[in-house]
Length: 387
Ligand code: GLN
Image (cartoon, rainbow, N blue to C red; front, side):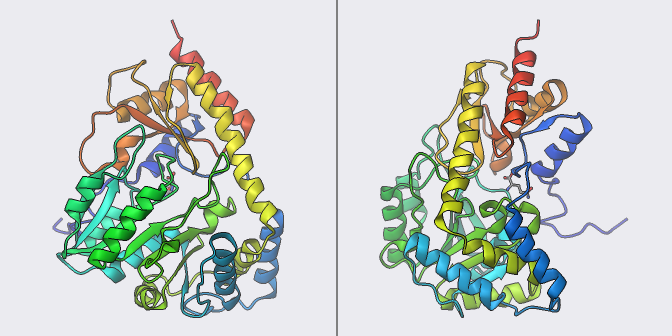
């Protein structure tokens, strides 16, 4: 057969999240790999979507999203971050953050342009950058602090740089961009006039009293940043695939040109549910974070107590852990052993790297019921102390 397909996509493996979730089913493992809660999101949000589904209309909603959801995103961004977003032209509703990221990358780069990303890097960014013909400049974050590499970042920014992508709170590292990192990004983006795509899907999953500060709040950055949110994370409804972008109308206008041909729009009933959710009182959002923090605090000592080197997690669904005490194989091999032999699924951190890494780290997802987390720790204990 001579059909070889698209050069960028045809040779890619299936995503690690799909692979590990399939292995979890095959081996009847507890799935602490792919990041999804094991309970459903709030009943009142589902009821709002169900009402909208039954009552209709169920025809194409506006291309940029229901007016009620665009207003809810603008109101949310003002309430939580003090941002001034135009609900008419400053918001775009997408089919998940994945589509928001894809549409934004395709909208902002041309072939040959450079795009700065930081690894560990969320797995959807690089294939899309490359499919657009752009050239990723991949800068590495180093554990355990995973801070932006200032000298390398300064050196990488040039008049070829057409986009920087940042993710905070960070998947998989669980870090938040600090004030000095926000200042550095601001200085460089303003000096070189580079837009910044800010993947902030875990904006409400921030722990220990810390606050997520969008880069867009920095002086000069409202015109340069696109913020990406996900109802999947904010409402524990990952299967809904409702995402949103907010930012300056000039940038959103560009992204809408791509969105109209990727998906055009997103199911209206789900949009109505998310509009309802974004307007919930503050209490919903603080409880979400407190609840997730409690799960982190359930899993972390369990893992540390059995010899994993647990790195700090200030936000997201994730804990990264060193396993060097148990094995000197690479992380993919270790994760395969855990899912097959301990019957606990995790994600090897090398899945978030463009180039090989030698560090021995795996990612555990803690957005699961506490009994499930406890059972996973018990399975790991039995496996790691087997005779
Ligand atoms: N973002 C999720 C994770 O990191 C997975 C999403 C997906 O499976 N595409 O686990």
